[in-house]
Image (cartoon, rainbow, N blue to C red; front, top):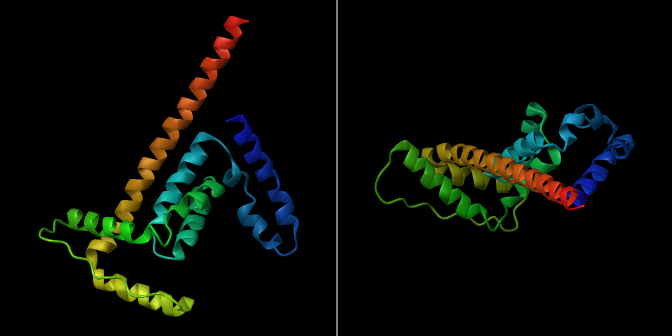
Length: 185
């Protein structure tokens, strides 16, 4: 844990050099806030929750959602950005199906659930991709519209709790190891 902690602290100290660069200087007032780079259990756990929530959002809006929520809530920016990577071209369809089923469950819809097949996105530009994605999402309707944020909130809450529990376990085991080492010496 200490090696990871040292690497993260060294990485976060480099941010001042990044924001001193003329091309990135305009971002410094927004992204150089100490709370966005704090490495403590509350900020990292909330960063994980924000990343899990925003990972369910469609397409390129994941990073924008993660950045906006990170700036709004003042949580760990690297944790939110890295965790939102769980959603990728291989996991997006199972996530959307899970969100669709979750939305149907929340809306009280019964009967067999069939989801229309996603359109082909191969070789499309960003605007054409966005148009096809929005048309496909509109076909799926309310279950997906309700299920995506609900699934994001559920995953975010689970990620927050898991991060807090694992962090606490790591701290307690470090204390116990240190105490055992002092008693044996």
